[in-house]
Length: 338
Image (cartoon, rainbow, N blue to C red; front, side):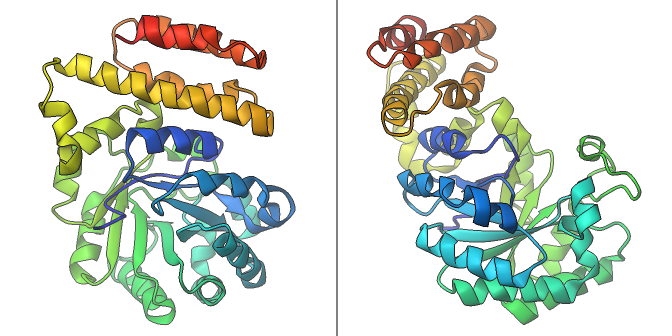
């Protein structure tokens, strides 16, 4: 099985462990990536938080590091291996102002030898863990230079997995918000990369938000990474499960409910799982329930009364702050998801 056929992009501040638990309930075979973590922050702040990822099974969670320091990457990769992450992803695609100032992400691409040193540090620290690179196409490079760049990384590190965003970075513009939509996407160059380097696993990323586009991409590349559309409409993970996971098709087809009833039945099951998860998180980690619920609210995207359902879910979640009384949230599920 190609575990990289479908994945959810790392989104800083959004795809935390609560979000990933929710997504794993919607689709058990989707590949998940932590938000981008600088190695210095990982060592001094985030290391212990990563322990809580052990609840997700089947090797679907990868940790993403950003750095230009091979020594720190070596140490962080050793820790990531002990924490049972299935994959370490190295980010050389982030276009932010901080990356530009500190020679990280997209701006590290001007120093391919340092990238190779970083990847080899990860590899030597954790040989059993999958190694992958997330990058962007670079409009300041010729096509041949892009091919040579990727091939050199592969040849000197044996990293075979490249997740490529189809949008480059606007020179002298350090707004990541502007870069979400500009310059134009160029999927064709990623198709050409796969054709020229067929032994590599090439995953395409960038504004992918419907089944038709995914079907088309999969004609040319090995996998698709979907970003903000999943956060906006998490039920799209159910669509992927129905379309591409034949094992689960019985749920959708061998029942007398109409399609909306089937989806509502699935949502109800998911919310009850979250109900148990939130109780556990409060008891063990004193977690604020809204930190979990905020990721779940978009489960009602495009459903009837979605705004009302979203607001009621948020209101009902506050009852979790009173540990001895969960009835409001339970009643919300029973009364609203039929």
